[in-house]
Amino acid sequence: MQSYEVLDEALEAMRDAGPELRSGLSNHAPMAIEALCAMNRADAVAGWFARYRSGMIPRPAAIERIPRDDWRSALARPERFTDWSDLIAEDLREAPWPVVLDRWVTRLAPGISAAATHGVIRTAHAARALGHSATPTRLAELADGLAYWASTYATLPTREIPNPSALDPLEAIARVTIVPPAKRIFAGSITSSFAVLDQTPDFATAINLLGSENDPARTLSRLTETFARVYLTNAHDALSTIVFIHSVTSAAAVRSLLPHLSQPTAHAALRYVWQTGCALFATFAVTSPQTLVEESSKDSAETLIDMAVANGDEHVVKFTEACLREDALHPSPVYRAAARHAMTMLKG
Image (cartoon, rainbow, N blue to C red; front, side, top):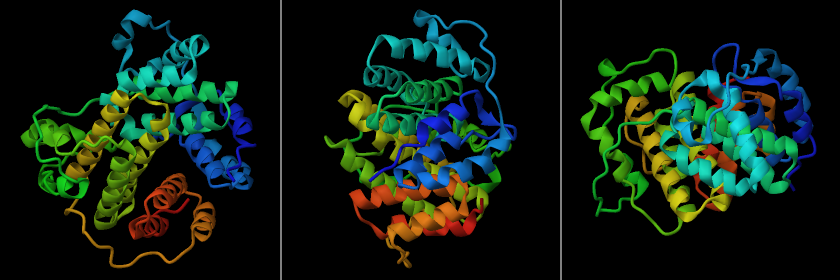
């Protein structure tokens, strides 16, 4: 039984916080707290939040209203976060939240890579909470999630070509070219590394490698399993652990959105979350994922949840929840092995 009693109280407590921390990293509080509730660990929320909130900073002041007929001009402008939140809140007052969600995911899907996928992930945590109860506080959080996605919007090189081969994700990822370490770019953020993809000609067609299915949920299971294998093969330090965690949690985020998306929007989201996983793989991986997992965690789901709570790292909390959810839907030893590994690499 999922426990969401404390979620609205926590969201209200951070209502005036910005989408990023004093460090410049994304504010994970709304995402991690919702994940704790989803794992039925609402008892851990207060202590976790008390430790985390010191890094928060106030949300930016509004600048001016974003016109509905010219919203594109405000994309990729982080200083307009509050203006974006106000625009989407206005939409939410005029239409049911699933309608608004589908509309904006359709528009923003090509930019799933924005802010290292934190826009789509935050949006998905808000949507899952709304699926339990559509409270005003959760609607405001959905507006903030979409606002973060829009204000940090960024696309990857894309060239559409026919793909008759319909590859499975594990086969497809092996065809994505890994950028040689000597040519990589890293300027302090995950997304800064994507700049090199403009000079990597075959990356633009990577979006076409994924075979299309009529069942997006099944495709997502294959995506999360593949990216969990990518994680286990390539996570060797704190940075690479965080990088490859996001290839799993962003795909799991699309899972949370699926019940509320039209079929065309769902397929678009699948393609762009696959493309983003390919970008993380191309710019940070060392080798293609292994087919087999040599050592799987024997810990129960309850034990892993307790360990994640004790660890306290925001990425560990969110990753553990995503892995256990995916494992429950489509069991594979890679999920628990990946969650257990992350706890050894990151400490809260």
